[in-house]
Amino acid sequence: VSALGEEGKKRALQVVNSSTDTEAYTNMISVFNNNEQEQLLGTNTNLMSEEYFNSTAPYLHKLMYFEYKTILPENYLMKTDKMSMAHALEVRVPFCDHRLLEFSATIPYEMKIKGLNTKYLLKRAVSKVLPKDIINRKKIGFNAPLGIWFQGDLSNFIKDELSEKNLKKTGYFRHDTVKTMIDDHNSKRKDFSLHLWAILVFQVWYNSYMKA
Figure: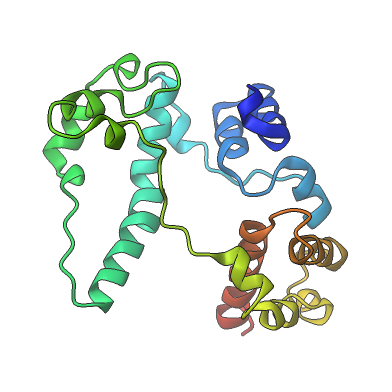
């Protein structure tokens, strides 16, 4: 538990105290915790649809089904497709073969995760092919260096886009809270890169498509 850090402990407590599966998942993945939502919006809201969680399946299977239908096609695969096509690359996703997905859906959840060891079966399957240091190494993502950009090249851009004047135009976010996030991030008191990115993307989207 100590490895979670203070923020991780707070987030874990929110998940444990959630009243529904949907709320638990939202608390697990949301960039903003409950307190940050209230400070930013003036309310704590959960807009997650219940439709993917209304079943008697094990909770892990509900999570996987939800991500199959949402995050996988709308985020991971979409970004991979766009970036690869932009550079004339033909990228394949063999783990998304429908036969493999259909088979994996029949595997009991107890065999997919062992304690905190994720991708358990996959690691077992390739244990005689890949070195142990590859199989057991920490996950490495492909995140853009937002934190560095916001403190450097994009510093003036984000201050302008998230200025009090621009935030009032959309009317959703409290400027004092956003300004505190920007100041804390630039002074390196706390990493708010994902928070600021989420607000920035919403503002740009809103100004592009909702103004009319």
